[in-house]
Length: 452
Image 1 (tube, rainbow, N blue to C red):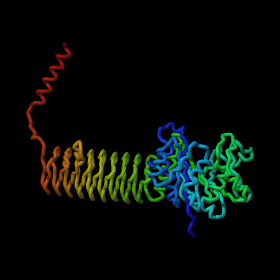
Image 2 (cartoon, helix red, strand yellow; image 1 turned 90 degrees about the vertical axis):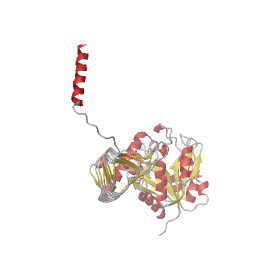
Image 3 (cartoon, one colour; image 1 turned 90 degrees about the horizontal axis):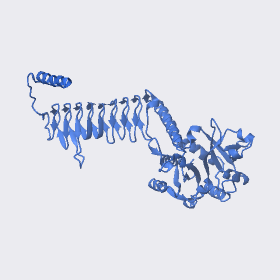
Image 4 (cartoon, rainbow, N blue to C red; image 1 turned 60 degrees about the horizontal axis):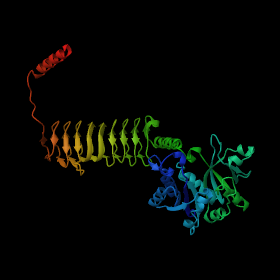
């Protein structure tokens, strides 16, 4: 059965002073994606056809990020509480008839399936649905007070709760959903008659109940509703997300030798039967296909690695690196904006930038693709089956033909034909007895220096 139209209001107007940062709190990243983008992605994935981001005058960067993501920015100035913040979305939703969920730009770990259950509560007859959780230590969290029939009766702040209410372990995450017309009608009734003089979104449940409307609590694991207010919280959220992602990877058939040492990005794609050794870091934009081996201490970003490939240990794949089936990039090799064809190998100590390496070619140790002339990046092409001798410098733009070879230590500045040998180094000169004479003379000087 199709669901009603959905919209999301994302609250991002807080000052975030505990972050001690010039950057707005929601723009700090988890797994390479800003917390604001996590919330926007959650809204999108959950079917929200309209997304409103409430921002504060102190952080125009939030407004700009919202616009860039296709969301509607709504200014709250001055800040007067969460209820007032949600009111700022009224204009953007004036012609909207459907269900609205209120999310927070500093709560990045909520899953789409959890949001779906919140919307399901509305579909099941509730006028208001609130996401709750059962923390290890309820502390100062607001409590969700339920009736004996399982309805949500009120949200009570810890400071105002009775001793009996403080025994309740179901706590308020802040996430709330409501039918759009009901939401803004109830918001118009919220007052700021409290110690802080603010308009609290939590009052909405009591107002709904006073009208005879039904409210429901939906439960989520504590790890999903972890809010970020400080750098410590940010690290905890990162750790929680990474732990979740590692478990998902292993459940999907990925071998992690030491799971806690592997770091994923928000968009990392790892297929089944990939093996990842310890201390591997994935930046954004990486795809690893079935059968690949990523060895220890490697760093990958913007790379596509085919099945049967081996990367590392201590390798670096930068954006634009493409490894085709069976290619190998070994220790202390860096690849940037370059393709290694099927079975191609660069086993040791090489830089391959702005290049195309043909199938089964071999790049010797110490080889450098000299791709930058101080003004422009230029391309190096190495043909199929070519053999690049150790310590070669390939000065781009240059082409090494199919089956061609370069001698060790060669500086290649001109194209090399297919099956040819390029040799470009000074002729070796041998002076018999020179080393012995040198040592004797130097030792005499040293002895004289000591006596003096």
